[in-house]
Structures are given as structure tokens and as C-alpha cells.
Amino acid sequence: MGGALLLAGCGGGPSTDPEAEGEVGPLGEYFAQMYPEQSEEDMAAQMREVEELTAACMQEQGFDYTPMDTSQAFGDMTVEEDVDYESEEYVATHGYGMTTWEEEAAPAEEEVWVDPNEDYVAGMSESEQNAFYEALYGPMDVVEETDPEAEMAEYDWTTAGCSGEAQHEVEGDAVDPFSDPAFSSLQEEMDRMYTSVQDDPAVASLDGDWSACMAEAGYDFATPDAAWEDISTRSDELYAATSETSPEPDPVAWEELQQLEIDTALADHRCKDEVDYDETYQEVSLRVEQEFVDAHRAELDAMVEAAGQEP
Image (cartoon, rainbow, N blue to C red):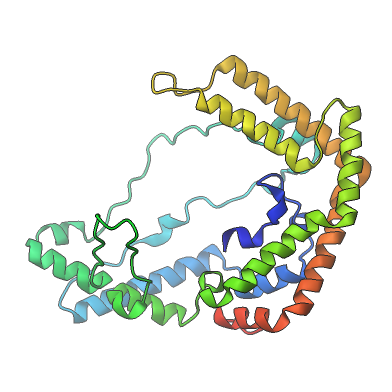
């Protein structure tokens, strides 16, 4: 799915997606249907069921298979709900978050995941191991290293062994419509639609007002994206100057860039407030999205059906 869900004109900078402001747009409603939210408990239960079905299938193939504990796959997914990432106080401390992040301290004792089938497989002969993994995952594709154009075959659950069979039984025939070639042209139009938001006269006028405000603050940027990209480029340049013997950027230059990032982001934030940037951008985005949905409703409904959901 990736970039299809992002505003193509953002250039990787702070999101101007209307959904980021708390309002689900017309396309967001379709995405919510394609990818309904699941709780950690539901996902864990689903993965446990897949593992149990895999074990039953492997038993039929003549192998002992211990279901894996997949709970570690989720880790700590808690979010700091009390942090207002859009507030001036946050920006004044973190800027855009490019150079101001801090590494988290490593846990005192990192838990190492162990495959419960490791000892069982280790006691097999090489031919038995090959048979075990073929039963579990299906025949392995062999790609000739001398052929740079060679590609792995597209995933097919019917040839993916017990794991593929179990996953299909739990998840059904649903596919990710954003990886389906049948919808590639629609995705291209969707990308153009997002780009068109940047080209809208209302946004062009908005950028002009924002740029004038930034000029008064001492900055020469045409758009908010340009301000974000300037810091990103400077960061890349500092890292490009590193070496194996000096893998970290020059600390003095890095500290100066951190301050520049905070100052720039703070001016950006204040100018956006002054010209009502986010509100106006959101209005344009929602209007353009609605026009796109009205023109492509049948295709979007087909995407929802392809994802195994009811449109």
C-alpha cells in the first residue's frame, strides 16, 4: 500500500493528510473498509490459530511441529497518548524530529526468540530437514545468481506447504488490493489526484501567504515541504561526511543543525497557524478526494471486495 496512502506532494515531510488532523476523508473511509483495525489480542489469536493448524497439517505429513509463540511479534505497541505532536511546545523541543531524536537505552537483558522446533530439526539428516521445510513452506524457488533479471515466483498459498494452507484457512481468499496489478492504473490515478492537491490554486495561494510569513521571520522557502527538505538535505550531507573510523556526524555541526531544525520548524509552525494552513489544506484535500471517489466509486468498491470486505 505504502505511498498510495500518502499525499504525494508532501515530499516525505510533515503530513498534510486530512486524516492526520482527525477527520477521515472519503478515501480514508474506503481504506478503513479494506484494512479494518484489529486489536493486538485479535491478531495474536489469529496467529495462534494459524500455528495450531500448521501443526495439525505437519502431523498429517509425518512430522512433529511445535506451534510457535508469536506474541513477541507485536512487542510493545503502546503509544504516548498524552503527547501533542502538533503543539508549539513539542515543536520547540523536537522540531521536525529528524535530528532531535534520542536513542532509547537498550534493555538490561534482551529476550532472544528461540524456534521451538530447532532441536527437533537439528536431529534430522539433511534429506529429512529438506523434507520438513518443504512440507512446512512448500518447494523453495531457486533463482540463478547469474540472472539479475530473475524474480521469485509470486506467492501462491497452494504451493506454500502447511504454513500457506493454514494461513489461507484462517484469512480466506482476501488479497491486498494495493499489490494487485488489476488496480495499478487506479493507484496511478490516485497518486496524480494527491499531487493535484499541491497544484490547486487555493493551495498555491496558501503557500504564497506562508512563504511571505516565513520571509518576515528570516527564512526563504516557497513551501512547507521545502523547509522540511532543507533540514533533511543538511542532515544527509553531515552523514555523507562520516567514515568507518568516524561513523557519527561532527558533534558541533550536528548540534548547530539541531538548533536550526528547531528554529525552522517553530517558524513553520507559527506561520501555518497565522495563515490557517492546515485547515485550508484539509478543505482542499477533502474536496479533491470526494471528486476522485465520485469518479471511481465502482473501482474502489471492487478494491474493497478484493480485500475480502463488504463495500
